[in-house]
Length: 304
Image (cartoon, rainbow, N blue to C red; front, side, top):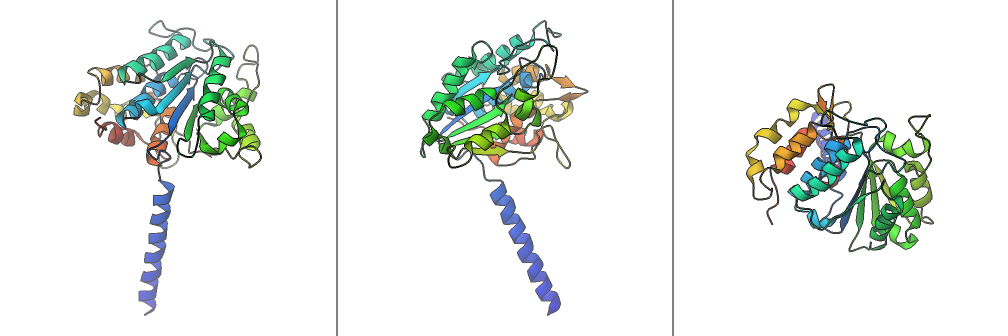
């Protein structure tokens, strides 16, 4: 009898844990509304040279081109090209991000997305992001993926209607991105201040601030028990070999171009498209991402 009770109790505990996993993995994207992304890549870390194309490829696999309404790239608004004034290809950081964002938009069919280079004119980026926030409603919510310093998204939220913030979710994963606005990396030139993730959360997540939903997920560079997306190049070999690249969902040559962009960010034998893990998260609800999850999404595209 005691053994039976023990087995039943264990079964209930396992069931509850499984239910918890299901709820924890509910996708943020629920099939309605809009998505906006803000990334840097024009200064300091060059992961966005790879992460931006992969983010676009993932959204395209789900047929969400028209739902990505805004992409503000090069959002390190305080300057470009100091850490990476050139590269093997001859391009500097600013030029690499232009290639990754604009060509990525072309390769993966983002014909209606508003791509804005934030470092060219921060006010234009603030206004565009604010306008998307102000369009938000219960039937048309907005997900903002913050893949760079928080200044552009923070200032846009600050300027937006308070009543619209409750329809907005802000996603981040990176401590560096969260804090860089107020923690310049190079004392001799990179001097600035601006919005941080915690400042945004403090100012806007409460009822008085508009009930913005701030979501900080696991580090997409990897951690204990999971790869993340900063991992060995070999784990992305499927981009070169998968038959799915010939799907009608993709332009001929798109996957080859994507792999060439992945090759622009190699760190000690690893590719680093880590910020794209936030796209995986909103599509799946899974925080502890891997190249296998990316593969699953891209090899099973939605055909329009």
